[in-house]
Every structure is written in structure tokens, then in C-alpha cells.
Length: 252
Image (tube, rainbow, N blue to C red; front, side, top):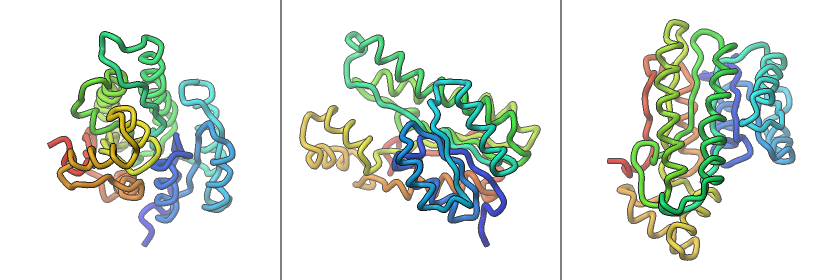
């Protein structure tokens, strides 16, 4: 049986590897999916792949409250309601010591990675049907941190506070709110981080990161998407306010 039949999911950052893999996985379990991102061409391709009867899209900047509200309204109008939201859009910033971290970059990272999920939470939770699920994509560095990543780590810790607050507020409606904390994923976003952090080629930087991970490898986007499906489904019906690590043991 399809675990998400009759449900509708709203996904930000849907053109990226985790967002797209999650859209595919949610749709494969019977959900309608409404995809948002800034890359219209990638969104159109995703809708064509999944099928326009089950998928729709809107170009939306998640730091713009009016744009997020309009996209959520479009999702509800298109599919008749909302049951799942995956706040997935994010940026990294730069690698630099706190004493040298550029002010404008720090502000930009917090705007995308904190204000964005807040706006998604605000507008999706207002219309989400009872029994729904909000998933906020954080990071392993929302549980830990390391040198040089002040902007990214601060933002990813911040959304844990948002998640815990919303989880308590929404419990009376049976709506669950959790944060997902992926470790290194084999995608372009992570490759760029590793190359900057290590100062080596993509292949050499990936080997360095593999050596840090107890399971000895990067995750695939599909592995993270499986957890999104679990958190969206009734199989996780008694999980709320939780930080779900999917990091190969990196935060242990």
C-alpha cells in the first residue's frame, strides 16, 4: 500500500538533489507534490518527470514571505489541502574564522537558512490538516560544529529551536514537527563545501571527509529522501520535536 496516498507535500529547494529525491520518493508513495525553488527550468523538468497530475510548481524565494504565502496557497488550491511540508532550501556561505567572517555573508546565510524555514513553517502550519508533518532540513552541524563554518552552523542550530517551539505549539492538532540532520551527501552542494574546506580536488576532499565518517562514505540523496518519507508518513506518528540524525555516525 502507498504510505502517503491522498496526501499533499510542499517542498522547498526542490531543484536540488535532496529536494528532488524527496519529491520523487514522496510521489512514489502516493503523495501529490508541490515544488518550489528559484530554478524554473529544473522545476518544470521535475514536474514533467513525476507527472503533472501529481506534481506542480511555483518559483519562490523562501526569504520572501509574500512569495511563500502565495506558493502555499497555490499548493492548497491545486491539490485541495496540505499534509506535509519539507523546508529544505539552504545555502552554505564561506569557510572563515569568526573573527574574519564577512558580515554580509553571515546575514545572507541566516536569512536563507533561518528566515526561510520560519516563513515555510508559518505559512504551511497555518493551513496544514490535522495529522500533518513539517520537516525542517538542518544538518549534522546543527548538532555539532567545526572551525570556519560560523554562518552555516549557527543557522542550522537555530532551526532546531524553531522546530522544538513549533512541535509544542502544533501538538494539539496532531501535527508533528521534526528536524532532519544529514551528514555529508554525495552531491554538488557538499562537494563545493569540501573543496573549499580542504583546499584540494573534489576527489581528494571527499576522501578526507569519508575518513571522518564512521560508516566511511557519503550518503546518497535517496537515502535522505527515505527518511523524509518516513517522517511524512504515519509510521512516525509518535515522533515530534526530534532531531533525526542521518550522518553515518559523524555526530556520535
